[in-house]
Image 1 (cartoon, rainbow, N blue to C red):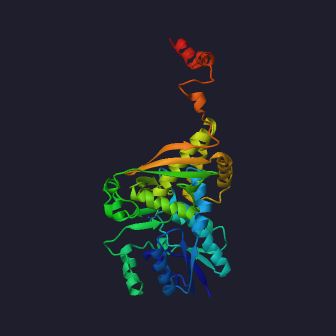
Image 2: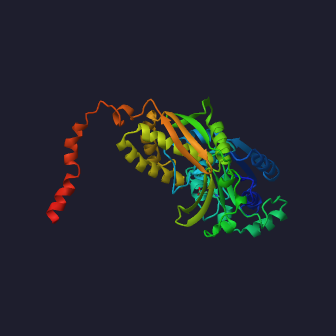
Image 3: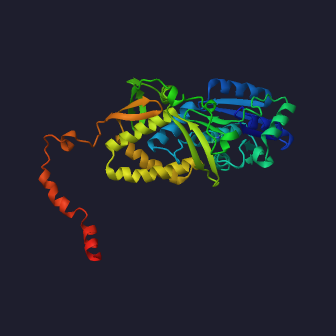
Length: 392
Ligand code: ARG
């Protein structure tokens, strides 16, 4: 009796994997796991129902709180962006993989499976976690080089309900942090995305004509309240996705360098992430020293690269996170943003840890004696002046 645990999304690829694991790989028992990381509730329900008919055993796990606390909040603290991408898919994979391993251990399974192709990043993100165990790793999509057309035919032959058609070809990955849309004509980077691919965001030109001011409060580098109301992370992010989406905030269209080196055209929606990352970065500029800000930009970039690659168990990730965590103790305060037709602009900020002194910097009366700066001015650019003299 051989058992395999499959990371299941309810989509065509992973649905096809269930019979394939039995027919082509000789597993007797296929256990599916649906990870709820904030996909629409209807999608979780559909996936659960489908899994219950196709698999021998099924788990639907609500991972939303863990996703926010252990992956999204750290990403806010690290101003997490890879080539302009907010890392939604990238951050969810290690958590899902970890849960698959836990189920496999409790079910005494022999193998772990995923439905990723051999072209993307997700195979790497899953397997770096899977391969830390001594269980077998199976990737039917990658092994068999399957095409959509073949899968659709195979699925209809196995009684698997197919919701994607040959026309509806967008490949979507969605969680609390972002919605990613790939495939079909979008693969041509010169093709202008049609309005129909967007679900979270209104087009900026259809957004309300009046701007909206919102206030976010941060503590230890993470948001704790919205407009004065304390909220848990999951609710706060969901609410910001709703408000920001209505204002057309958080669409991006990136040419992205995948880990393997392939360039891909990637379209994302991420209203809450855009708002939170802008607010957080602004607050940091108020409370961190100039040297901390410069150094942290390098740490943040290294952090984002590891997160993109799914290397959250790398010792360097822990080291960088320790540095980031230390800096965030002072990242507390309030930020106001103006949401208007596709933009989220910080318009006000305050903090008890602000390194800003209105009294010192003001154009009005001040305790600074301006004459003190004269000596500094004399030495400013001193070496450059010497070089110019020598080169005459
Ligand atoms: N490019 C992104 C990443 O590697 C998102 C991929 C999402 N997949 C999808 N089928 N839309 O994290």
